[in-house]
Image (cartoon, rainbow, N blue to C red; front, top):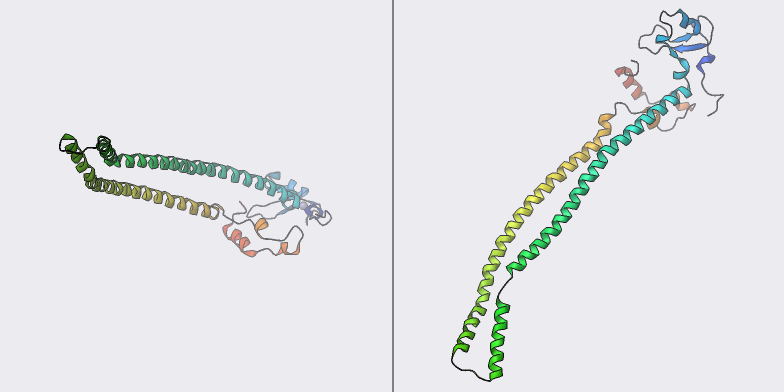
Amino acid sequence: MNFQEEFDPTQFRCQIHNKRLHGLDIRDKASKRLYCWNCVRELPNAMSTVHNIEEILTPEGLEEEEARLRSMAEALEQEAQATWANELDIILQGIIDRATELQNMITSGFKTGFQSLSLFEYEKLFEALMKYLETFARENRLEEGQMLDDYILIYKKFIGEAEMMKYKKQAYLVFRDEIKARLKNIDNIFNNMEASLKDLDRDLMNFPAKARMNRSPMRGGGGGGYGSPNRMTPDVNWIDEIKRGKKLFV
Ligand SMILES: [Zn+2]
């Protein structure tokens, strides 16, 4: 910034005393705004209502205030983000971790359960029958009697396993439907959680609009450093808003 071009309010003089300006009254209804030291001395309450004009009408004064506001804004942003972002991360990561853990548990539980369902006897019966046939072959003999009767008994049980499998299949289907119903419940719970998270996301997106009363004209407006021509003709809308709301002068 060129210091020669910088605006210096103290180079101007009071209309009454012809002394350099030192004070500024920023109250809503001030009878006058510009003060030299003589004007200030004439005030009943001295400096109580008059500000140092250099704090308010110089680039340095504005920059100092802007830096103060910026550091407050940054601190607030960091604090706000640290609070919710961290908690959200912890909660969501916890959900993911526990869901993965439960997935492994349920998958392995299901396998164990299914294996117990498939404890069919046909293998045992098959092996027993094969042993009988080996015996018959080894002894090279097939005759009436206990051996053959036993063989036929076991054989009937062996072919009866097909019927057993039908029952076991039915039991499995009932079990599967029950699991499906439970999964549906879990899915509903997850859908509710998803809806809550989407609500939260929407609130977070809308939060800036809720929290911000006025958009900062200096940072948002694009272009216009100190001394640039369009600085004197800023977007009028926000000025009108301030005038209507009378929020600037309190
Ligand atoms: Zn004066």
